[in-house]
Length: 104
Image (tube, rainbow, N blue to C red):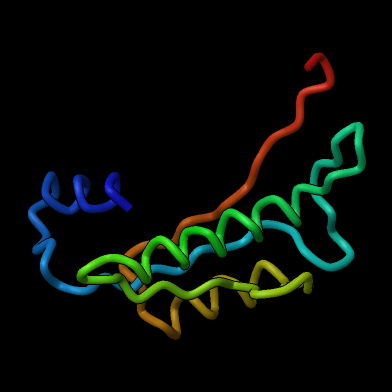
């Protein structure tokens, strides 16, 4: 969120105006994304991170209007994700993913 506000200052946007943000919570449902050795799935990690962002945002004096592409373990097509962002007329589309490395 701090990075977003800094970017707004850099690009001349008013930081006191509530921003409309959509977080595209990667993968979901039948698409697990990366899977760790212990079985942890990317789709679960990014959903937890997105929910934490919502929690932190709600504690701000001037929270932004944040939407998620999914709020539970469900699969949403790429076209539906972009259609949602367009219909909400968001200021920022953030796609949330995490990577996996076999050598760690």
